[in-house]
Length: 336
Ligand code: P6P
Image (cartoon, rainbow, N blue to C red; front, top):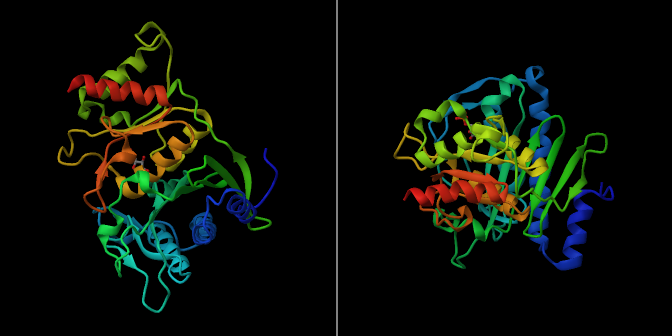
């Protein structure tokens, strides 16, 4: 385990050593990390707090919002709006962007987040998480609009997630590799517990919702059937399967021991490219996975190269162990 330093010390040392983290970005990361601590307190209350179950509302995606979805969204907005590091925010739970009110100074960063990913797992006590992505306002024009957010994932200044699981952990990249912090609740501090995360290029574990099998496109069926054929099949090895239905938990497992995560396009809603959202789920997770030596595509192209057309755009996702992502992506290209 690396030397037990706090997130604050880590960020200051990174800023001092190689300037990879400008002061404003360091402040942004610290504020988001503090907001995640507050969210973890609400999450951990469970039935002891008025946080379980559904709110009487739907989000822009037409999904029934859980009370904790709304709580987490409000915590992130309130924590970040006054610091002067942001121009605006965007959230899975809000239709439009949230421009920092005039009573506060505006900064040059844009923060996007899924405040509580996997919220269908809240009531059954399975790991959930907060995913965030940081962009810089590209235009020097006054004001900020949704157009400022529509940048390819390769433009991200930082990305991370917090997983509320057996341990509460913060995983972060600023483009200099991936580091992990574990929340020390006695100190109330994020402590560095893993650095230099690398995803094995090969794996024997895949993650996909198998109940959708009859809806998949042929390249996905081919890839999964070859995995299921095991050591007597074309892959000549047995595979294991996992599906937590919480992207944060599945990605965390892949960062920890390898694997491939797939949420492909399917025939249920053919007009949609996929279920997951590009800007605040696929892009941040793809940045993290690539920084850990993995790969991330939509089946045809690198996710971080995709030019978004709208804020809540959806995308198919294949990410994780490099050689597996390249294989399933190759099957898509062969099928064209
Ligand atoms: P399904 C959670 O709702 C989420 O957006 C991701 O975290 C997760 O990977 C996926 O959807 C689960 O989808 O269709 O298996 O419930």
